[in-house]
Image 1: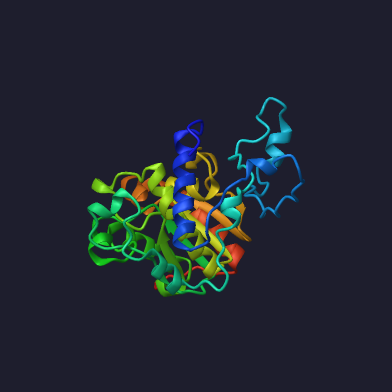
Image 2: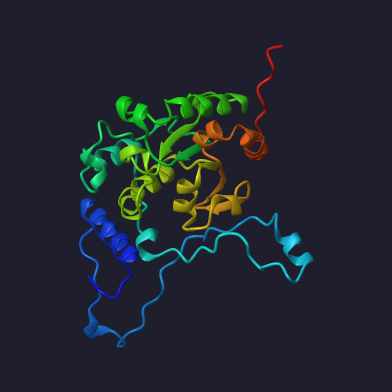
Length: 275
């Protein structure tokens, strides 16, 4: 591995190579003897993640404002373009994941938390990673934050079984810490495959880790929360994590505004009051 690569890039590249080795796709290499002797037609690059333009008018209104305050997403790499598996299913993704030992998170986990819900859902919620209750039960969002997420889903006029719920990493980080970059890089290929199989109309990222992973940015979620993005032929919107709302109840109104945008996009009607 080229020692000149930044540590983060090298970790991600190594994770992708291990992932493709799991899929038996063979080796990726460049024969330096042929470099410069023939031209290579660039591979088609999937649509980049770009912001829908709710802020464009405001940016144009003042020349002093920055041209782009939303995440700047680089072109999709070769490895990201190749991670679509023909004929894939959620069952096959879970089988390929196996009893994963690819990163350090497996050492203290109780159960892998793969995902749950409708495999043909129009709406997918993506969180950060399992907590204690999720690790015990092997299901995502079943603790206090999960109960609040259920209330949010029902307020949208849906049931949990109507949507699909999963996380960026499938094993609980110790003490519920944030997943490290190399752990995200190792686990995220399976998340991408889950999303490709389900092919939802909309994805809601719950919290900064999920949004930063899918949008490939280090910007804080406060900079782009509530805005629509194009992501792998679907729409993506980020909002605050239910666990954040438990600590900051005043933010529930902002999250409800975000969910109303999702409801309008999907043509959903809010749950009627029982009064």
